[in-house]
Length: 116
Image 1 (cartoon, rainbow, N blue to C red):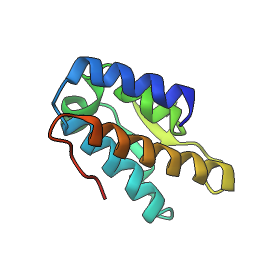
Image 2: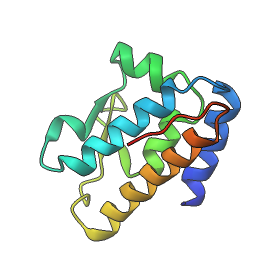
Image 3: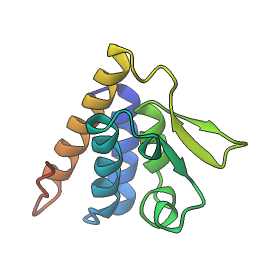
C-alpha cells in the first residue's frame, strides 16, 4: 500500500469509526474504474454531487485517498478526474493497490465488511 493511501485511510478510519459507507463508496469508485476503464463517467467525479459530498467529501481522508489512487483536480477544483496516464501499467497497479487497501481497511473494522 502506498504511503499516501495508508495515511488517508488512517485519517478516514479515525473520523468514521464503524461507519463503513465511505469505504464502501470509495471501493465502488475504484472498482468501476478498474473493471470499466473505457467508461468516462467513472473517471470523473463531481465534488458537488450530494452523494459524493455525503459519503466521501465530508469525511477527512476521503478525497485524499482518491488523490493517492490517481485522481487529480480539474475544472477549477469542482471535479476529480482519473489522471490522464490511467492506461499505463503503473497507474492500473496503483488502482489495484487502492482496492486492496480498501478491502483490508474494511475487514479491520469490528464486524468487518467483505468487499468484492
